[in-house]
Length: 84
Image (cartoon, rainbow, N blue to C red):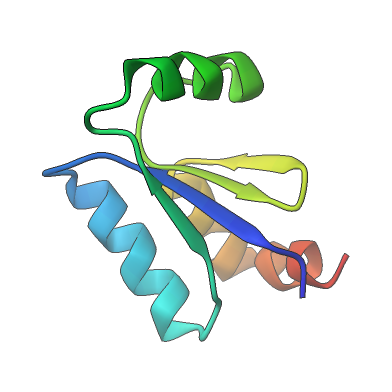
């Protein structure tokens, strides 16, 4: 299965929802909490072009935030990305 990286921050309901959806689907992920890491936030923005949380990366492909994850799950695209 393609590795999943989940960038989060503290007190983020969308981050909590993303973690819950991944757990419900049995998808392992690496969580990187950037609550107190301004350099990490800058690197994330450089890598993805986004500065909101969560940010989900599958393999080398940026999926986006929680709504993107939910849409990919509902549309069947999530499993395709994981299998790539």
